[in-house]
Amino acid sequence: MKLKLSCLLLCFSLALYFDKAYAQTTLGIFDSQSDVGSVKPAGTASYDPAQQQYKISGSGQNIWANHDDFHFVWKRMKGDFILTTNAAFIGKGVEMHRKMGWMVRTSLDSDSKHVNAVVHGDGLTSLQFRRSTGAVTEEIKSKLTSADVIQLERKGNTYIMSVARNGDTFITEQVDSLDLGDEVYVGLFVCSHNPNVTESALFHNVRIVVPANGENGYQKYIGSDIHILDLETQNSRIIYQSPESLQAPNWTKDGKSLIYNSNGLLYKYDLATNIPAVLNTGVATNNNNDHVLSFDGKMLAISNSEKDGSIGYTLSSRGGDAKRMNKIGPSYMHGWSPDGKYLVFCGDRNNEYDIYRMPSAGGEEVRLTTAPGLDDGPEYTPDGKYIYFCSVRSGLMQVWRMKPDGSEQTQVTNDDYDNWFPHISPDGKWIVFITFNKNEVSPGDHPFYRHVYLRLMPIGGGTTKVIAYLYGGQGTINTPSWSPDSKHIAFVSNSKLLFPVYPIAK
Image (cartoon, rainbow, N blue to C red):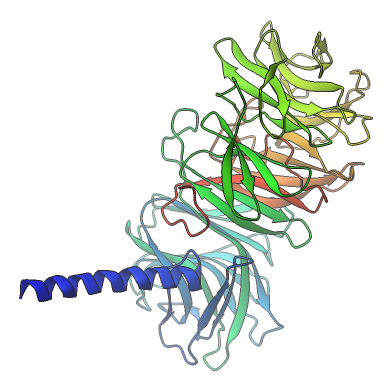
């Protein structure tokens, strides 16, 4: 009898394991899918693992009043979370009030308490919620219509909807004191607003982030995701995950690898095999996230944290003995001249952070900036005519540029955000940088675990657009991470890894 019971328990456990494995294969980061309410024809969902995209089809009368009918792809979760996706209906559609978006529900009952961030077929974008079982749905309409990017965040019993048209910054609405319980159903939905019609939507850049809870990233880490962003499609794929802090990926000249730092070491990540290997950096074994490849890809400048602060070293990009460059610290390496003769770095001298240049063969450093306040992140353009950097001298952190001798220092961005670490594309046409909300950070700080944007602008100036909406900050894109063909960018986002489904560190 005991043997039979043990066998039954084992079979049950194996069934649960394989069901979960199959669901992750077919539904990515979600556990399952369900039709909620009275739904005919039945809804469907499919997952494209190569592009990490979801196609969801659903019918259903409506999500409104005191009950709901729709198709739901979901995951059970507890605690706080951030849900983000790019979304678009497929085809013209039948009903102007067809709906898609994120939803959080207490149960899968049709009259369950819930909140959803929804885009309608006619463009109406709103935050809708039911405070108690069977109650009438309430709504807060966004000033924005036809959102392409939908985010829904939970902080306790507060739910925050942030929406944008692709390329723009977020517009936010929120509802407070909405108690849905700790453990909830979280997922994507489609409703046709017509029980006899099926509507479909495509979702990409789908992210479920479990944010930091007291961890500041300097003493205690949460997990990391390495992404590859395709600039043409704006689709971002997670290629690797780790419960440790992975930071600042550099793309190698041959396009085959990324170099990133983690726990003081540098790693070379093979993009073909999805396997990282430690890169030998000699005596430098406490590397931080300021490391940069020379334009020809043969050399690497790194920054090693030591007792007198960060110190710059150079070595072969294949690894090997590291040569000390700075006599004093802190010194943070950020760029090479295109001819390989000079290094530029951020240095703290007499409690003032400025941009310095020095010969890559060794020699005396030359101070290039003298304005009060932090100057950081210097990087040469591929033609060698300018050095781009970021500076707080105008009040907020903004992108600046100067001639290689430090002359003609000119502000490039001038907006109401803090913009850090400008990186120039290898073809010399574009600048990408990371943007922090000024209400969340001080101008001279770029901490871990914040809502940030990656933004793109033409090198000659012009319209700036958001190319990634993410949870990250420190380590996301501190150093150049363009692909050699200028078509892709590698970056890091952060989340507690409760449900890894991509290649993960062993």
